[in-house]
Length: 225
Image 1 (cartoon, rainbow, N blue to C red):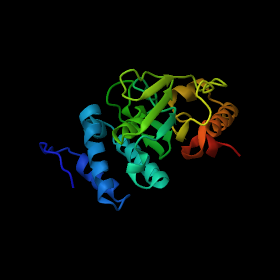
Image 2: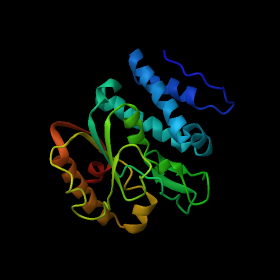
Image 3: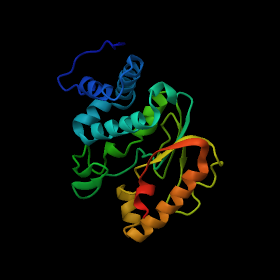
Image 4: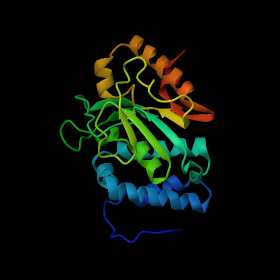
């Protein structure tokens, strides 16, 4: 297995995280891709420090890799695939005022790295895709200017917000960060609004996928009756 030369840290979370993620795949080639991706996320985005400050970030990374394992088989299959992440997260998302937030993992205790900010809403899925050499596209209302993937600033609370994207232009799509984000909940506190927006996103996902395209994960679809 490929190994990076680096100084050992007493607070190193990378190696145990890699070990746990490698259980998702049997092939050595996938293990190499996992290791390389985690180390690059640390080099480029300080993943280790962010996990130490906010342990929920590690849970998010695990969840994103788990979805890839369930949907794509070998990680090598993602190379050059065009993948859309709706509500991908941004670098300007704020921590909720309350220390608890409802997430895909249940109710979480948010330990802030700094006042008003949390790393849990950074665009981790698109970052992982970039390191796996996929053609990642992210849409979100927050700031993504420093990111190394194609991104668009979009208000997903508006009908037709994704209409600018061409029909059948993606190999895969996911949405998983919109309905639990503090900004969205503040703007749309009522469930009836959530259902309207979820229906719109679901319709757009169907339109945007190629005939053989897949939905990696969709919170929008799970909200609908």
